[in-house]
Length: 330
Image (cartoon, rainbow, N blue to C red; front, side, top):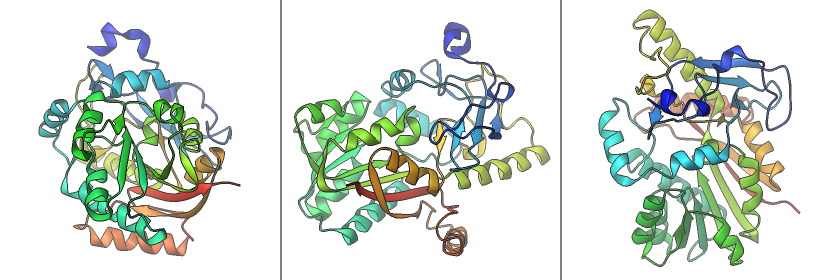
């Protein structure tokens, strides 16, 4: 198993060590808000280089962050191995809906995002970069609906090739942002949908977006909601304590996945405040922030989430994801 063949990659149980300061705002004295055993493995690697999954909650900015060191090199090695055939097998094996691939709900989310940006500015025939584009579904919608000129980045060479073929096959999707930067290419819109939470230093990635955006360009980001994630954790924890204590596996060496949809692949989950701080740290000014992601089947939770957001002035988002739109700061 991964924990035997590559022991140097696995750190001690995260809940037993000292609390690390918030990597975004530096606040100390935070507490562990999420803790589960049984980390999912992919390609003989734990999805995060930790023995147990524990996330600390920042008392100042509300960021949920893994209480253990994680490197971008490790995450690139993991995600670069993904491909379409692996994804199909993964989806066929899980017993819950996985938030990825080309499910109907993902298509609806892509469509919602496209229409939201179209309300903010004219996006017909603009140059658009999708960072973390996977196999290019967002770009397909944008091309058909708004004749957008698509480019993209995905660390998986197979995903990038699939996106490139979907968009017309002109090497518009690549495995690194660096080549676009080196060529001096500029885009009117940059999107990063459910991507920054998989990066060890997302503030560096956000700063790099400044190099590929036009002066009046838009950055659109969606990330998992820390407030929703924490709520879901407590609901699932209560369910397991009542019905089945083995739903989350006790063994670190287990290849099993987390049950009931709790995702263990995120070094970070973001509150609205921490997402806005992330963008500010990268040199952006946020002018829209909200919630996104409830399935159309769950109209009541969506309505409740919308009401809570209104009552709290947007500070609390129990939608599955937080969405922000920003421009380069002057």
